[in-house]
Image 1 (spheres, rainbow, N blue to C red):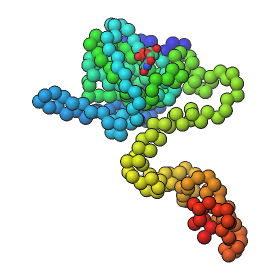
Image 2 (cartoon, rainbow, N blue to C red; image 1 turned 45 degrees about the vertical axis):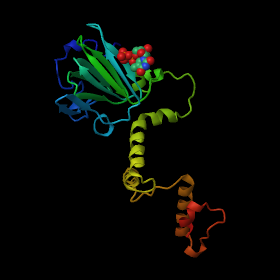
Image 3 (cartoon, rainbow, N blue to C red; image 1 turned 90 degrees about the vertical axis):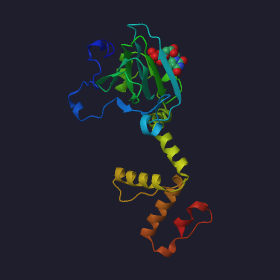
Length: 260
Ligand code: TYD
């Protein structure tokens, strides 16, 4: 099967995102169009893209595309984990993005506008104007292993149907790659807040995780051993008279409160 964007010319110019599924009315758009900060000055125009306000992921690479011959396209590949933010600094270009059976097409023709594309999408770039200059901000450094070059392979990857040649270990790297951008932003917020223990981030996580687990409360701990010790103490406190609890000589210092 060919890429879903074989005839991008069929899309109207400057169209809002075009979608393919009936339920799209309520779905979040795949491509997020953001307006960058623009500061016009007598001596030129300054455009600003900030990670937290506009881009939404930490940027680890920037590359640009220019001098694309008329009629040529670029892209035509998928990325497993990479997120990208496309800016058309000059001229115009058409960007088509597909994921989970949906396709959205946008025309980028203003330098103050950026298209933010999430992980796990197929992309095609077409209709480059002769003067176009595109800059791409990417969430990771170049890694050919993140590419899926054939559309059929992309569909197989989406369906979780990739051929398995051996029984793999649980791929922790793949799991964490999918949320790496959120983790990096959260770590940055915590480091910048100067509060490394407790604080708003931990409280918010405890509340959300409690809701997720259907529990009334959730308490973040330093490690799994703390959690086991506290759970066991709590259980024996419920089963036995309170005076039978004793702090073991070997209890790690951090567990002190649990035994008191
Ligand atoms: P590719 O990503 O396929 O280009 P496009 O999506 O614009 O069509 O990359 C083209 C070639 O350039 C390919 O051989 C990989 C190489 N490349 C890098 O070495 N580093 C990079 O950061 C990028 C984007 C590509």
